[in-house]
View 1 (cartoon, rainbow, N blue to C red):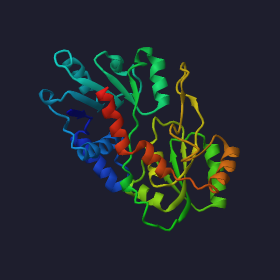
View 2 (tube, rainbow, N blue to C red):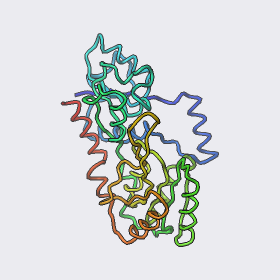
View 3 (cartoon, one colour):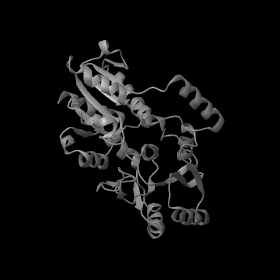
View 4 (spheres, rainbow, N blue to C red):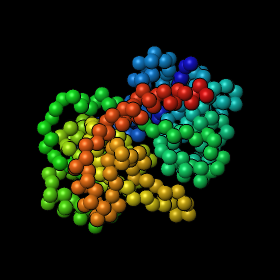
Length: 305
C-alpha cells in the first residue's frame, strides 16, 4: 500500500519570521501538525512504506492523509469525484467540524481524525453523522529524544509549565506554596526553545502543568517521555456556551501511571504530597501506548479496514 501525506507548510515570509523570532526570543517553533509529521514519517521510513509528501494531485497514492490545510482538503474532496482513493482528514484541519462551510462533514472524507476522546464527543455533538467516521489518533512522541539512561542531577523538584491560565488567584496561591517548600523552575508556553524544555525536564523530578484546555496536550507527553510524572490542573468545563461537551485540560492523564490531578488549591496541596511519595514510571506507559510504532500501526490498520 502506498500513501500520500498532506500538511500545510508555512509561507516563505512566515518561515523567516519564525526563524528570527526563535533567534531573538528563543521561542518554540514546533506546532501540532509538525509534531504529527515528525512522529509519523520516521516510522513509515523504518517500515519501508512507500509514501510522498504534499505531492501534485496527479501523483497522489491510493491512501491519503491530510493533517492540516482546509484549502487543499476542499480540492481533494473534489478530486475524489473523478479518482478513487481513501481520504483521512485531521487532526489539525479545523477547531470544529462545522468550520469552513461544514468541510469535515463532507461524504468524500472516509475518516475524520481527532486527537482525543473529548474532541470526538464534541464533534459528534456538533454533527451526529460523524459518529461512525471519527477515529481518535493522538500524535506520537519520539521517545528516543529523551535519553533516560543518562543520569542527570535533578536540579529542580518541579518544572512548572503555564499556558493561558486565567485563574490568577489559584496560580498565585500554588506558586507561593511551591516557592516556600520546593525548588522550582517556571516556563511559559511559546517562550522557549524545544531543546531547552527537554533539558529542564531532564533536570526535574516532577512537572506541574497549568492549562485550562488541551485537545491532546503534547507537552504532557513530552514530560512522560522523559519519565517525569506530572501534577496537572484537570478541571473540566463546558467547551462552549450552548454545548454540553466538557473540555479536559489533560485528556490522557491516567493516575495509575503518569501523574495526579488537582482542581483547586486544597487538592493541589494534597496531591503534591502524594505525588512526591510515589514512584510512577510514565515513560514505560507512554511507550506501550503512544509510541511512534504504536500510532503508525493504528493509522495503517484503519486504512486496511
